[in-house]
Length: 121
Ligand SMILES: [Zn+2]
Ligand SMILES: [Zn+2]
Image (cartoon, rainbow, N blue to C red):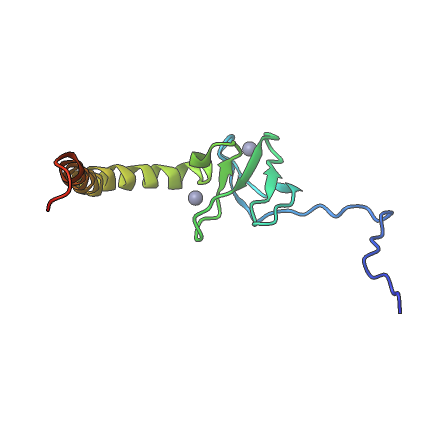
């Protein structure tokens, strides 16, 4: 009864948690960054032991490299993965993007003509 199990031994030295080895986006070295900020959603902030820049694990599930730590959403992938994404993204953007844009436009035009000419009977 009343057993407090949430007591944390604060005298214990924090254990340095190292991530798996991956390529740092800043110094391009294969490093095992140190976790400096635990993140609930698994986006642990890490520091490269070589260049001391903040990095975090690339979002690509099969990728073990690191992404640059920025507030921008675009940088959730390591430079290599981001390159691939950009490449495919541009391809998808030209084909799919055009189709979607055309669809939206024709839909918008039909909506405008519908409301513009008033209710049809
Ligand atoms: Zn580095
Ligand atoms: Zn990656």
